[in-house]
Amino acid sequence: MDRRITRARAFAASLGLTPREHSSGTQRRLGHITKRGNGYLRKLLIHGARSALYAARRKHDPRSRWMTALEQRLGPNKAAVALANKNARILWALVQHPQDYRRPQAA
Image 1 (cartoon, rainbow, N blue to C red):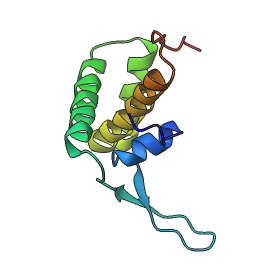
Image 2: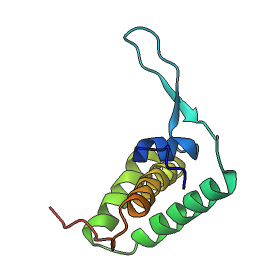
Image 3: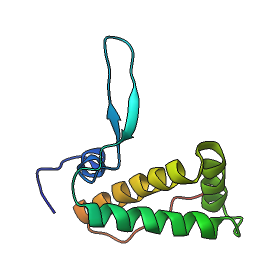
């Protein structure tokens, strides 16, 4: 992994999983995802997110409820990209700080 990427958001942006920004003055406009970077890795993350969203519909744990609510709020496509973005950030953290992944505890 490129050591020049110092933040998880920058890693997600390098994969094209963050929205394009068209801002002027005080008005902030976010557009479609940028689709820059490795398209194959982006596709794998989005397909994995779609699969996780599909599986979450049948589960009732806190993370699955969060994913189901996200999908209802944003729609299936935006929710898949948002989840892929979140997973890319987790992936970056695991590579940068080599240790076992611990799922966040329910609030």
